[in-house]
Amino acid sequence: MGLAHRLAYRALRPFLFSLDAERAHDLVMSCLANASPLTRRLISQARIDDPVTVAGLSFPNRVGLAAGLDKEARCLPALAAMGFGFIEVGSVAPRGEAWSPPPRIHRLPQAQALINRIGLHRGGLEPFCAALAQCSWPLDPRALVPVRLGVNLACNVATLASEAIGDYSSGLRATIAWADYFTINVSNPNASNRHVPDARPALDPWLQAIDEVRIALAKQTGRRPPVFLKVSPDLSETGVDALCEALRARSDRVDTNGLQWGVIVANTSARRDAVRGFPHTERAGGLSGAPLREPVNRLVAQMRRQLGNDIAIIGTGGILSGSDARERIEAGADLVQVYTGLIYRGPDLVREAATALRAIR
Ligand SMILES: Cc1cc2nc3c(=O)[nH]c(=O)nc-3n(C[C@H](O)[C@H](O)[C@H](O)COP(=O)(O)O)c2cc1C
Image 1 (cartoon, protein in one colour):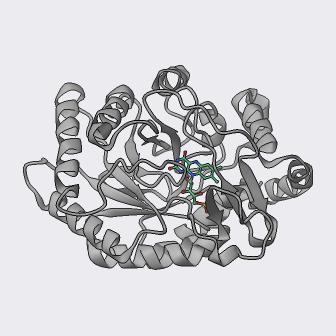
Image 2 (image 1 turned 60 degrees about the vertical axis):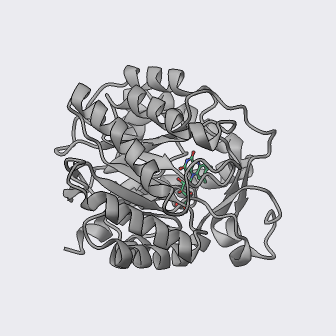
Image 3 (image 1 turned 60 degrees about the horizontal axis):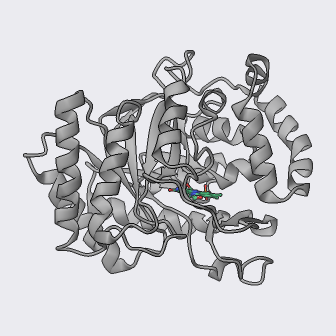
């Protein structure tokens, strides 16, 4: 089946790449959202069975879908059929956000990269929760260990830093019934407001405030999903130090009763040095894909050294092959996620990466 998927995507790709990037994205997503059971069977691939427990949660394998592809959580059954171990939806903020005029996604095929300035979920939490409520669970009934759902939360662009905890709490409350883990997007390259402090001591009370919401929710619902902070690949040395120290201090506390924190390394980059000279590099937005591979490997290795072994790391950025996934795990990540690699390689990448990671043990 792997070969069939590879050939099918190789045949389809020239057509998709002949369309404007956002149009191709919309077309594929609406096919996935409306996939009949037959179409779903055609795109489905056997999940590589490689169970692992990370941040207190069991995953069927170590390859996930990064946030932003299914921002609206409308394609979950079709995506789950592709063999992912986990799928992250969002980013979503409490209220809808209008997007800036197109073009908003640019392909840089020579660099196997994208530049995007797609905003947050356009409708906000209400339609997002309605989509989750319509889904049938578990996401893939064939999976022995359930395919996990991550919910990626953001603040509204106009929210003041002093009110940011309120936005994140609304997201945590509204979606806790479905989320196996949460991501707090502290690195949206397309938002100018700084919603999360990037230095100590301000970071410590911020983490504590989020934990207070989590403790209250755990009492009400019995659910204690881990929370991952999604960081920028452009984080400064002092930013890395501050974050790692604050997370370690938080995780060492006994009063949080075992609530787990983790990090997702990393979001898209504002830098252009690796793609200088290619078309579209002057466009506003975040860079993703192959140029992130090495800097993210270095950042993961540095954060692993500073975080120790008890805080989970999900490695995201520039994974376009099984060996890229393997390098990311060897750098210190526990799990990996892909997005741009799917555009260039197609769904076969999921299987290739999960197979490469299964071979590590
Ligand atoms: C078109 C597009 C939209 C994205 N939207 C989001 C988003 O809403 N929230 C988020 O946390 N990351 C978002 N990302 C970042 C990805 O989740 C991922 O962190 C980044 O692209 C690096 O991985 P990659 O090189 O495999 O694409 C987006 C990426 C792309 C290409």
